Length: 264
Ligand code: PGA
Image (cartoon, rainbow, N blue to C red; front, side, top):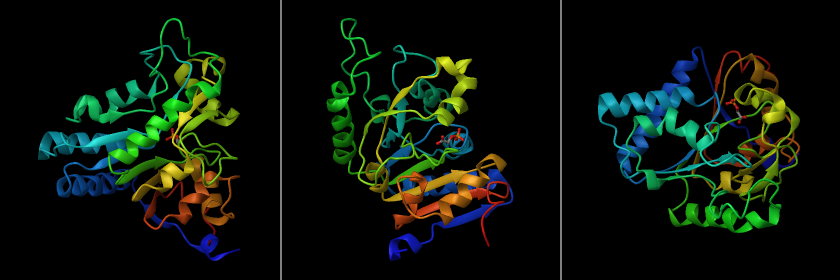
């Protein structure tokens, strides 16, 4: 084990998930108040919903102002039709953007549909045809000044964003094939497994680790095994969440259930 591999990930365990949500939201609010043009990296999924709800409450009750904030979402499904209600863009709209004052043009998503036209169907389009869109997303993040704080969930298989096991430390925004566990976890959204997209566009591991701060969260008993492995196993593409241990300002927020299998 080298020095990097032995670096622990700062881990906070909360009795109540709501306290973890509020703690992350408070930190984001402090950042936004100190830097009204803050750049946020955002995740979808069950994990961050409480943070978005709390930020929306702060916007409503405490005049937290997002009008100068720029956001970059981590990932998006591919091969959905434009405007599909299950797209992450729509999910973010309903859970967050409809309740705060982030400007529409400042809410950025991987531009997988940028060049979409009736004559250019996205379904089945070869991966090389997305290279421009991927590079554009990387450039957009850089020209916004980089991500100040990135909110992150951890998948049951250890993915971060849609960086499935096998994703390398140097990976960038790209098209990926989704693993069986990832698709199974999304089946309830799509009615059944067959309807879950097989491909997605995601920020890479290198993109994620360039964020100045990372606030990762995991809640519930179902996440206990992957949380304990993330903290204990060697840093490697086999378990992408282990790369968080290489970051100088990453914190993992857990509830008691998610922390239940951490080795003492
Ligand atoms: P979840 O997903 O928040 O729905 O548990 C986390 C992830 O897959 O990144």
